[in-house]
Amino acid sequence: GGNQSIDVPKLYQIYDQLIKANSLFQDVFSEKSETFSLQETKIPGLKIVQNYLTLKEQKLLVQYALEEHENADRANDRSPYDHVIATMQFIPSLDMYATCKWIFDRLIRDKLVTHFPGQLTINYYEPNEGLAPHIDNPKCIKELVVGFSLGSSCVMTFTNIETNQTLFHLLPPGSVMIQTGQARYKWKHSIQPSPIHKHPETGEVIKRGYRVSLQFSDFIDGFFDNPEIQAMKIKK
Image (cartoon, rainbow, N blue to C red; front, side):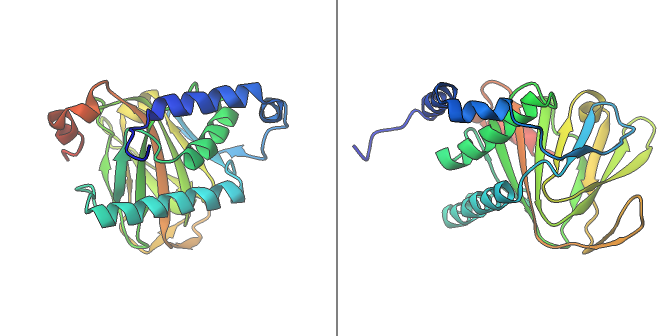
């Protein structure tokens, strides 16, 4: 009936089993890899994979994210951070899960990540909006953090917490940023609050537009059941 609760993880497990049973989907493991390139970085544990998401995938993911933006506004259920639409225990729809699962199957196949992190944070940035320097709280979030960049390009600033060394990397639409190890725990990341960014290598002026970021991570057990732990995540 309409009032019965849905076991979301079970639903996604069934979907995963259907994929394995369907030889059409198995082609993802035998296809030639997408035309992507890894940016050179001097930060151990940081991978920025350019041109990884197809245009169709980008369009679908933006559509799903904006639907959640509307849902959060209607429910008056926004994060204390202006740019965060929502942090969710489960990906909110089977359509969105299927798209993300397809992408992560490729990332795993291409040996860029080890697994599909279960929790999702959706971020929406206005053209002049920034992101304060921070490290995603390791008391709440496990090591692997994966971000999909959608919409406008931006330049992300990385600052070493011990030496204050600063490095800059371009995040173009369709790119995937992967953080592990030192990139997770020794470097803060941030975005300058300006409508204009400069390309870190060419000096080219980038006029920022609206940007959506999907962040996938594994929260510690019990995070979504414990308000005290949740409050710890948003401490600046």
